[in-house]
Length: 238
Image (cartoon, rainbow, N blue to C red; front, side):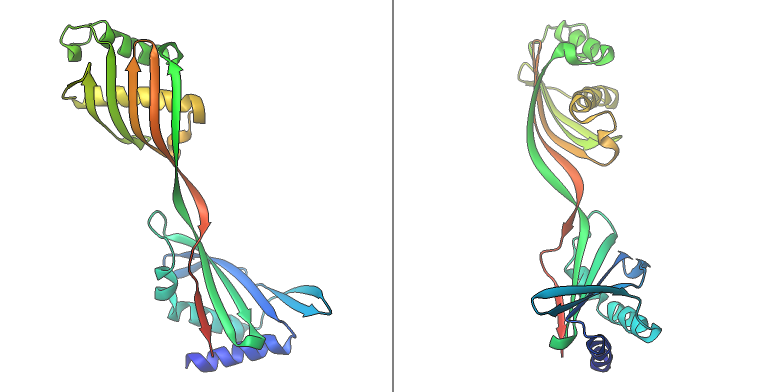
């Protein structure tokens, strides 16, 4: 059944004189979400490439939709859908070679290693006072003792975060939720100075922070979303 559809598909574009026909569409999980049903035709002649845009006849559109549906499992298998159920599907038809190619691009999280140094005075007043009170032994978490070095790890974005492994002068301490939020506010404040205050809408950070006197040191991975072509493709030939 699929072979008959492919024969009809290739014959149609071959009759138009096309060496290649391309189209693309947005897929939501396992169905077409947005497609203008237009194709760009490529004809190679005398060292030149002649292009033309068309909207194929309805039987061809139906065949394309059926071929996508029948091969959706294989298409998804070749696509990174960890972060988003939407992806772009690219279709290339080579009628003179009796060959159909499905390729995809999806939103993936890209991670970059970063480091960032700044001064305690670069924090906003609220976060500066929070850290300064710990250093001066005026916050209950320090047990009334002055603190030279504050270390902790962090991982998250917006209001989805984790702060862990808090050490004051190399002593590991337990944090309650309120204190954890305050330490995350410090991270958010610092990252905002580099990426802007809306960085956490989609981006993610995970790493470690050290506050030593008036100096702050961050080593972290910064994750952001970008569209990336899938490494593999699905090719069907008859």
